[in-house]
Length: 388
Image 1 (cartoon, rainbow, N blue to C red):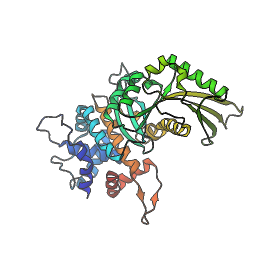
Image 2: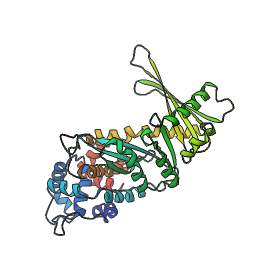
Image 3: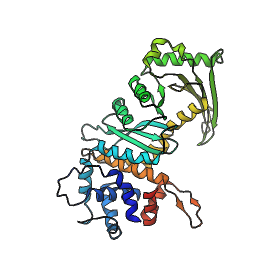
Image 4: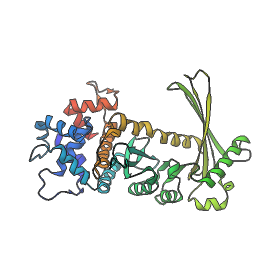
């Protein structure tokens, strides 16, 4: 069963070409398996991976070939720095497609994250910036691509979208991705978009802002609109979010509509926040504006999609930094940082689906970090996580 569990995952990565010479001592499948299993158990560096592997070598010999024992941390470092990141990503996408049965109705948040210690040269401090696609409901990382700088997200996002099956999904992106070509590509892939609008698109921003601000002021008189309101009183603050959606996009002008493929509605989120720890009682109010390809005025749906997008910070980025210490990773050679990050996302997808059960079958409510420790403590838990 243990061997079957590893093969069930590795079958998606069999097309990955080994970048080494034909006389390599350690099979690529062994190296990939050891890396994934060690990260599931909490390893945060190649030294960690090597040490975990040696401590479990007798058990590992029952499920892996290991013709020359455990690879050194230098071998792990060299192999992952040489692996083609695009080929690795395609294998990753093939696997994640099996975790999400259908993209129809899926909310996909596209957002970027910088690996702060991955800069290639000490004098340049140019860190690797990753753009990830995240299924907010399933909390599954669907894919990622790397760029050298945050400003290059505009070119990385289309590459990432092209790798994904998006038919029927709704893609949410922050203002950096509010670009006509990106909107066109999303529609071409039979998907919908909800894009944040800011000053990087000054004409669009001013017209959308004016239309919605005037609509709120006039109570949307003689305009079709939807409204949704929700209040959150957690984390020492009270936040009320009000969402208005209108499909009266004709008021933006035919010339502007012709530039934005599929633009069918506009939305605004007004967040009123009061910090309960602030004795002055200060209340802040902020409005954020969006364009959408969804017809109609479904405000609850837009509120859910927009709220889910910003949840990526907690559901993905925070876990990668706090639980897996990604920001402190110092891999800098070639594709090492990007590919190790991809291994973390493989482990994260597995851990999110893995459940620890008591003898009576009741699911134990645990943190991601405790799940990693459980995999390290118990081979049974590790195999169950691989099969999750």
